[in-house]
Length: 419
Image 1: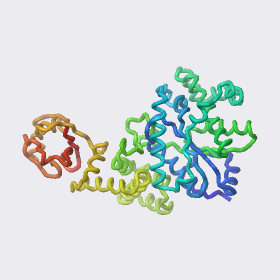
Image 2: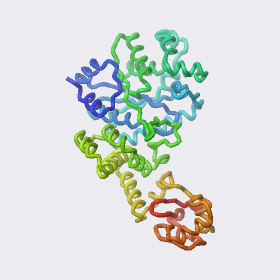
Image 3: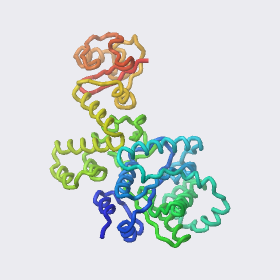
Image 4: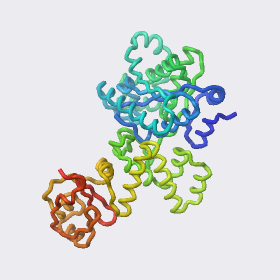
């Protein structure tokens, strides 16, 4: 019988490959298991590419399995050989430790929004990798690996040719494999989850356990999430969408889903939500404007609630509706969200006039252009039309002692932040 979890994950296109699928299917039907996935702490926040992992955690915990989230406090210092062919930055231990703490906090907050947290254990591999005796490790673990097999991996070959890989990065596979062995020995962990780019590393871990214990373990990889241009989300991406609301506000996060291209909306609605497949198929088949808009709003609401909770979802919707309608009913927290990253920011001191702000901050290119749009009633200050060219801002224009909302036309908003 096909296992309930695997059936669900397959139906949502969340599985790329499975190692030892038939045996894993039987194991999941017979027992609750312990599984794990690793996170690289080279940033202080998770990003939108980690959402599938959160979906997996939710689904396995929902059916009373136990999930270990492994923060790579040691492996993060070394780094998985970069698939882009670029040399990785070298990180300090202080930097990695700080990020590990921040990511652990963030995971707890996100997961507490969604599931029973009791079946989740957040660990850091520095607690065992930092204690390894290098001779014992090379003798007992290194001897189980073929250097030929590691060097034959395509991206490693390419990086070696271009001198883009260090010896320390080459050992990453051994360390990640040892993590799986350690978790198997100490927590009876039998399944590793990871993105499709982790397929080879997962297999190495499974093979290591087989060689040492002659026992079967398992692996599942999931597809990599891409943006509207088909580019993978990563920590180094300039336009990344972060799960930390101090780096990407809930409003901006909500807007990301609203602005998702039409060809991705139904795919991600299927993958990331528990909406019925029949309903999603109905929306997709009746691919009219209203249904696309409905699908985008549904996805945006579900994802924002999953990551930020109900209160911040309500705030994101309120900001969206206010900016769309021009009915600017903002509280201080709403304006702080916009200050984080929601709309363009203009930092100025009192004494500047309206025409100067418009030109100085490239809302238009010239004084003459600024004069024309002001006289044409196209500029609003805090939602009220202002057609005075040399208008000097005063304290009555400043909301909460710091902010003024400027709008050009119907929807081009700017947040003035007074210094």
